[in-house]
Structure formats: structure tokens, C-alpha cells
Image (cartoon, rainbow, N blue to C red):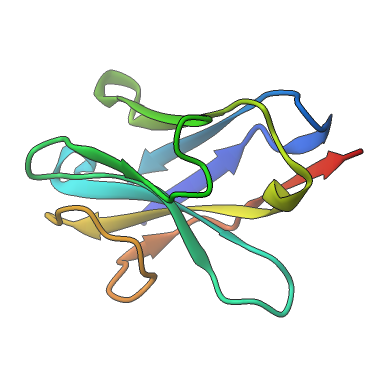
Amino acid sequence: EAQLVESGGGLVQAGGSLTLSCVASGFTFDDYAIGWFRQVAGQEREGVSCLSAIDRDTDYADSVKGRFTLSRDNAKNTVYLQMERLKLEDTAVYYCAARYYSGIYSRPDGVDYWGKGTQVTVSS
């Protein structure tokens, strides 16, 4: 059974840092583009960052560019999202996503697998 499991969320003060992890199992990790999305209750799921399965390029939403860094460890089937200089507006549930043999994507359409999410709360 294909699975994505996120961890690393929590409560942090504005300006602080967190690193999220996403561990994949049950599918060929290397064949999938891995993305991070976030969602606030009542709002649409928003693409945060993505790593292409084709050219290993990475992309970031403008709102997180320069503060978030996505990395991948294929040996551990794990993707990390390092988040720095966190802002109140980064508060959301963060989801890991996998899309088969895809380039960069920022919309939730066409995602093959989703994790259950991890809560990130940034306080003032």
C-alpha cells in the first residue's frame, strides 16, 4: 500500500524554524515528483514547493521563496521541507504529495498520493 507520512510540525514563534519530513513507502519513490501543499480551514489547498521527477528541479511559491528549502534523500525515501523565518501566515496543515513522473506542479489536481498532513502553527 502506497503511503506518505509527514512529521515535524508543531508550534513555533514567528521568526523561528521547523523542518518537515515526508517518508514514502509502497511505491517507487524515485519515479514521483514530490510536492508540499498547505491548507487553512475553509481555504483551498495551496502549493508550497515541488521537486520534479524529470529533471530534479525545485520550485517554490512566491510567498515562501527564500525562506523554505526542499530536499530529497532517495536512500531514505524521504523529502524534507526546511522552513525558516516563519510568519504568522505560514500557519496551516502541511501535506506531502506524490505525482507519477511529473515535472513541477503547484495544483492539487492529478496527485496520486497524499499524506494525512502535519499542523504548523506560528505564534506571535
